[in-house]
Image (cartoon, rainbow, N blue to C red; front, side, top):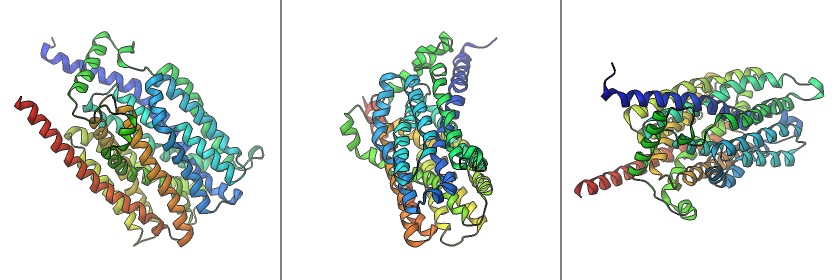
Length: 442
């Protein structure tokens, strides 16, 4: 017979297993499609740039507009999700971005591409921070790094799957009178619409509404999350304007911008970089998939390590310094094998960082500021990392003709980000220790 003392452990395991299997596979697939639709412009550029006569600078600006729109809409979108619920709001996001992604097939030049990339960013804004917020409704803190890492494995997995898939779709060139890049956008946009409709049937807004949990499981999870919320030492409830001016929010955004910029820059520009070695579109897709496959595995291992040890600061900082080291390699070698190693280092760092970092951030925000805070960090990071750095890469490459020099601002950003997480993490540790000491003194 099971002892009474082991019942809570068994209840916890069964509850978290049920939650994980109910939510994570579906959300992973949704995010995988989002990343494919966001980044497929990189593979499309192998044909599209010549057809539309786009320079590197113009293409970089078009790609960066996604992140400027993302910045403007991300916080309002997350606040709307808090008001209307994840089920309805995530469905809205996915359906609109799928339609816009498919519609990109019909752009006629630089200006129409600018419009569609801006609209895609506005449509998708709020999905990632919305899911992060949604997971805080369901996951106790001890599970967040590994679960967020599992969710975010969709990013490298999307490129691991999407690069060869996009290369294959480009080979449909001429079918029904359309170019391969037209089919790429259309066929990769449709799944988002279908998954958006499925959200209405799969997702449940809060644990207390989950009929797929037993009464005992539902009660345990609700109580555990409430207990954790009551014990948080966090950035408390403040107005949205004050939150956006809070120095810690800006430092967190700076830290995350390094990983955001690394992932976005590689997604947009790596196919062009690999093209310089004389590879075909299909070969580029296959070679480009290698670093993403490795990153998919290592980010899960790194997230588990962070949860197992409870350590977030060094798990985040080390990944940022790995990105910087990989980028600096480009100054000393330019062979194809070395380039694949560089891409692997950068992408392993960019994606392994995400689980520990978001677990760290969600632990610092109170429940009343989580919706705006998570979105604010993501929005500002995407503006710095995706909007500015992707654009800067194209401008520097046009001016110098050098891929290595175009990557150096990104290397500097990641170095600063790695140092910043160590500094702010140490500060927060001191504050928490002081608070704990004051409580025990009472």
